[in-house]
Structures are given as C-alpha cells and as structure tokens.
Image (cartoon, rainbow, N blue to C red; front, side, top):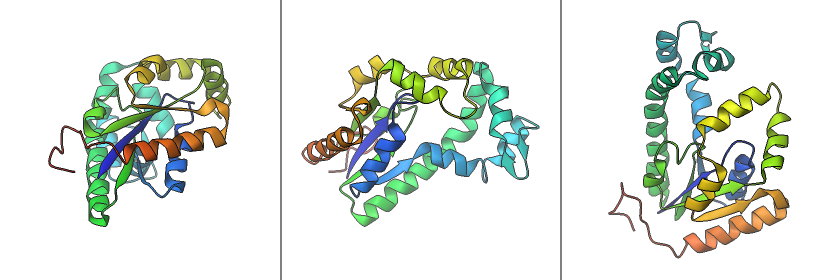
Length: 205
C-alpha cells in the first residue's frame, strides 16, 4: 500500500485538493478533521486540565485555546504533546483499515507534515501551492482572520518555497480546479509505479 502525504501552507488549497483525491476513489485521512473530533471528545478533559478555562459545554473553545497558545512556544508544545499522540492513533487505525481493504493508495492529509517530521511516515509528498498574493487574499477573506493571526500561523510553517523544494509532487492551485484535478490524476498514475519507501513500514510492498 502506497501512502501519499498531502500538505501545503494555509490558504494554498490543500482541502480542495484532498477532496479531489477522494473523488478519484482514494481514502484520505484528514489530520485537521481528526483534531476537530478530538476537541469535541477524547481531548477535552486533557486540554481543560492543562489549559483551564479553554473548554465549555464539553468542547474545546478553539478561540480561547488559540489565545493561550499562539505566540507562546512552550504552551504550544504542551498542547501538541497532548494532541499529536491521539491524532497518530487515529491515523494508525485509518492505515490498518485501509490495509484490511487492500487499498493500493491512501492519502494522509497533514497540514504540518514537514514541521512535525511526518515525511518519514509516507512514501511520497505532494505539496499544494499558489502565489503569495493569492494565498494572502484567500486567507484574509476567511471569517475572523486578521493579518496578525495570518502572520502568526505562517511563522509556524515551513516556507512554501522550501516545501516545494522538498516535495515529490506539486499541485498548483492557482490555475483553477480543472488544472489541479489533472495534476492529481497525474500524481496517482505516477505513484502506482513508485516503490514503498517509508521508514516505519519497510516490510510493505
């Protein structure tokens, strides 16, 4: 089973691209969606214990939590130490289910793939990218987004130029949906001929 990592900086079109892989019949594990589920379930008591007052009505208040951790590297590390193992457990179950189905290719949608060293868990990486101005316009159009918040998020992410340099594939989301979808299909054709190389599953073929 070939595991393709999908990543991209904020506002680059990664979520739309992930949907294109799903449309092509490929199972996708969405790390962000997993975090959302955890913030309404398993992670709630852990986060309340570590960051008192950041949960309400049995859910994590993402705004309050962001206020506590954004710009505070130590607090962010404490949060990641709570959440990342839970996300990994969900990812491992996703992969086990995919193997049981005998899927040939799956996608791990990981926003901070390079930042967390997750490239060792995949066989190839596809980065979704667009121009800086397009990225900025997309992000600042989001409800509740500010320039300060955008810059704080960017500061935590590996620069787009570096992601593109390290990636096996680049999906250019700036040229419209049809072009991006064609690139996704090209990637699927290419990975069908590529060997499994991830370091944690050398036994797979």
